[in-house]
Amino acid sequence: MSSKFLDEMRIAWNRYINYGEISEIVSPLLEKSWKRCMKSGVDPYGGYGTKISDKNFKKIVKENKELLEISKPIMENLNSLVFGTGFVMVLSDKNGVILHVIGEKNIKEEARKLLFSPGSVWTEEEVGTNAIGTCIKELEPIQIIGCEHFCKTHHNWTCSAAPIRNNKGEILGVINMSGYSSAAHKHTLGVVVAAAYSIENELYLSKSHAMIDTTVEAIVDGIIIIDKDYKINRINKAGEIILGLERNALDGKDIRSILGNSIFKDKDSFQKRIDWDFMIHEKRIPCNVKISPITLDNNIEGMAILFKEMKDVHKTVNIVSGNKATYTFDNILTKSPKTKKSIKEAKKYARTKGCVLIEGESGTGKELFAHAIHNYSSRRDGPFVAINCASLPNDLVESELFGYEKGAFTGAVKGGKIGKFELANGGTLFLDEIGEFPFNLQAKLLRVLDDYRITRIGGNVSKKLDVRVITATNRNLALEVKRKKFREDLYYRLNVFKVRIPPLRERVEDIPILANHFLKRLNLLNGTHKKIDKDFFESIEMCSWKGNIRELENLIERLYYLAEDDKITMELLSEDIFRTEMFEEDNILSIEEQEKKLIIKALEKTNGHVIEAGEITDISKSAMYRKLKKYNIDPEEYRQ
Image 1 (cartoon, rainbow, N blue to C red):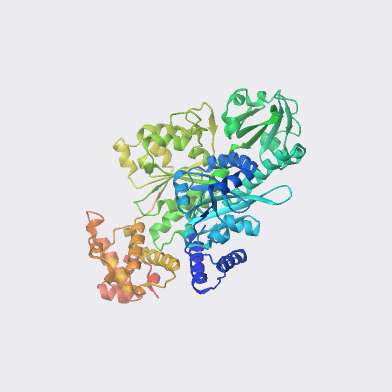
Image 2: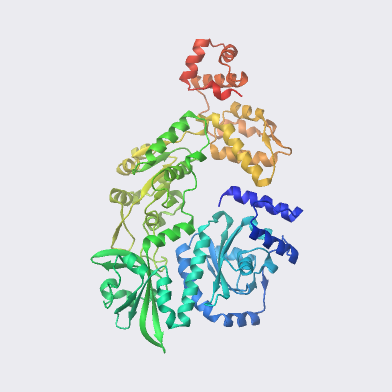
């Protein structure tokens, strides 16, 4: 979800709470909900759930026993796929009483602070506009992001909920996913709708054996029904498509000839989804599988095998995890010829399949370029998976990149884990801070880049991948190679195409553009109209700014909040800004650099008039035009 939308909703919420005004950005459904909350007397600064007594909660749990039994495994399966993305999954009954919560410990702790926990009531009347309560009111799937919540305490959250109905269309409960608003994504709503749909399907199955045929074909996953002798009775259309089979091609065959025998001895396959391969006509098809026994009168009469192709599992994980490039080349603000040259080169490289190495100092926007290259390439609809090599402990790098099978090592997730290379299949893998990649693992990375095959830790099957690798570093990798800290062969493999991003001191003409961009964002966020005084930029130039874009953004944010009126002036600059030794030891500008700065300053003062600028600097007309060409200075840029 864009920051612009979040900012506009924050402004809209303030206008309604303080003045009762509804902005155009507020949807009709949201407007109805806010008005209901206001009429009910909900405190917009409250928003904490109301606990019911233990006695009543036990009674409600008992009444919803079937709903809980069917929903929990589905919630656990989905949670295992989105683990690590900062979301919590919640199940409530039809009256908004939370029955079950599952998720990572830290996000559950944050939710518990709002009493977003079992035994709490989360209706609109109790906590204002929220996905669960508003879903119950509107009886339809709904997503509430940030300031769309009526209560301010929920503004850091995003919630997506869908109703769970019985075969009569009556609401039984609500399935919900909540996380931080910064991770909001429209596909999260699709995930909970799919989860609600799966729960409903399981409920239908438990109600009547007569509904099996309809339900089997309605399930979006593949499903195979076998009898107690392991003979295949039925496979749905989705399963036949996944396995590339014609209708009824497997009827009567022994499932063990396709899956092997060991999966039926693995307890995990009966409790949750596990990764397993189908073998069809000597072709290996990686899938995510779960086996459910079919019992009649406490006797196992057969099994239902649910499976989904791994590439679809990866797609779901990427959607929920937000593994998507969000920036394009249009987001790179510049007037600098050097940066424009880098953009031109990057666009050319984006159309190729080769590895791209992005070099640049910290804070110059390397990740922005990586996003843009992906979105400019033919892989734009595929995943964009980013990993910072410097942020991972050495002993976790291999498992993060290549994944591992279940039981691969002590402390591993029980069912195994998908690696970043697999998640990026069909798209781009961005390895940031590649200069920090452990030397002892560089040979393995090189092997993968040679043939794009990976083998999970603890596994014995290699998988062919279609991945484009982009790397970035603020180090001089060629120097690291000389120092024997980076493999030379890996360096040349990564350095097929190189993009250099100039530091801000080499593109000082971009400082006003970037500073005003950062200020505009702060103005939108806070509903202000502050401006930057012209003298401010002259002062920045005088101090020979040595920081990069990140430092400039931090400076503008600091001065924005320090400015007591609507203007940011040079007086707000602290003395340490002028101490350029803070940024680098060698501050001495070359004669050419000083001359270029002098000419630019003269052009600014004369509104781009070349002859007048020459008179100020004591440079003849012909010499001035030679120097303009030499330093690639366009006088038109300084004409107002």
